[in-house]
Image 1 (tube, rainbow, N blue to C red):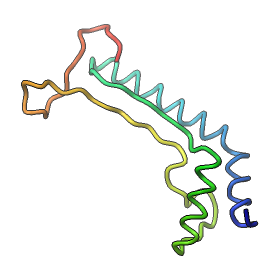
Image 2: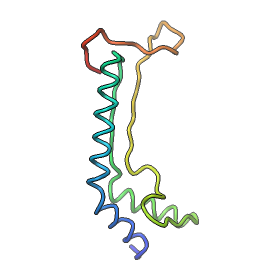
Image 3: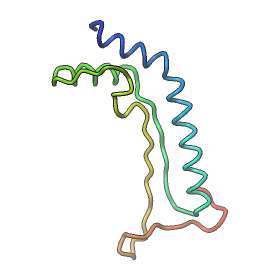
Image 4: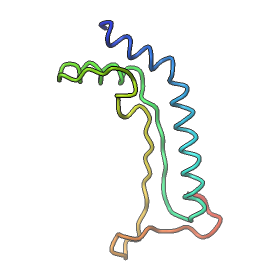
Amino acid sequence: MDDYVRELVDAFKDERSLYEEFGLAVFKLLNSLLQNGGYKYQIFYRVKELGKLEQKVIRRKNEGTIYNGLKEIDDLVGIRIVFYAHSADSGRSFRRNPAGCSG
């Protein structure tokens, strides 16, 4: 691993816990809002693995993209929400759970 890649990976390693806290906070907020709305859904979050970040930085460098810091790198933390739609509907409305049921 060259110095450029190592510097970015080490910076992320130092700050990864902040990304984890942020991802968890957003996850909890969205989950609460969706539960209160009665939607039928699944929600996930993840923080980029160090090895995957290393691969991404190397790949992008080979493609001609040089990052000047972590703030320029997309997708270090992600949230995915899957909504379940009524099959009898046009697919545009979301199925809601009865009040009080979790996602």
